Image (cartoon, rainbow, N blue to C red; front, side):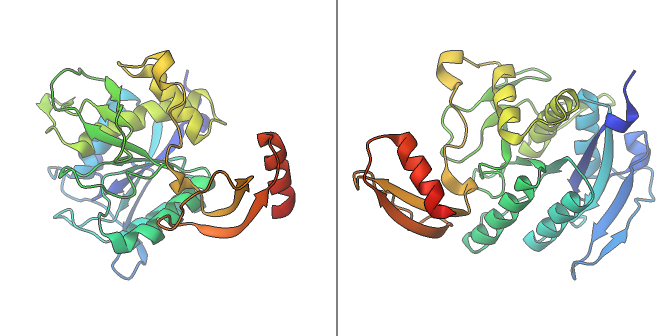
Amino acid sequence: MMDINRMVNIAVIDDGVNEYLLGESVVQQLIFNEDLTIDTYTIDSPERITHGTLCAGIIKLYYPDIHIYSLKILSDTLSGNIQKLYSALNWCVQNHIQVANVSLGSHCSTDLSETQKVINQVAGQGLVIICAASNHRHITYPASFSNVIGVKREESNMLHEGEFYINDNIVDGIEFTAFAKHKLDGKECSNSNSFAAPMITAKVCELIWEYPLIHLQQIKLMLLKKANNYMDDKHWGYCYADPDWMSDILVCHVNERYKMDYRYLNLHIHGEIVVPVESALEAVNIALAAYD
């Protein structure tokens, strides 16, 4: 029997969840207003199908033993602003939410630095974020960040329900391609990135329930091994390829031979030192001592 006290707390950050159609109560339903105040919110029409309801339904289809929180930051036309997303993610951390399913993002360069900062902060506090990539193939944040699990839909009709691939070429930061055309109450979802992500969210919830102290990189590695195209000799070192997960760093040049060009990274450089040693372990120890 499932221990209700161990059920995973998940936030569906979207346009609201219809409890009538979902078939069960949502723990809490909140709306994030334009002035970033937060109010309770209820969809009072039993017939209204929202995007968030479909996402919640997909998650429960693949892993039903969860507590769902609905955080409405999108309008009825699925528009919103990035500040509401920041507010919702911080609310998740403050209210012991373990997983956030996010169907939106920004491809505006002016949002990049602040979005990266917020993502790294909440991820550092233990929130696991699964985010859909842009349907228009833009590099979109937060989906493309290393501290997020990015997901896009499969377009070649090779995958079946519950299946997903590892993306071998992740220049856009999106690690997984997943099946999206799920059947809910006999109706098929459209082949959209935002319907691919909730299936991965369900698998993440299952891993967190099984391993309560698991962290993001362990989750990614376990997901890799569940992927249809996983190969042990090819994908074993598949994490943190991009330095965007770092925020405050000390740059350590070993014998001045290896230089890092960080001009275009959104990083706070704490300082730079040259370490005249041959051993990488010595370099790490000296760098840590210098940082302290």
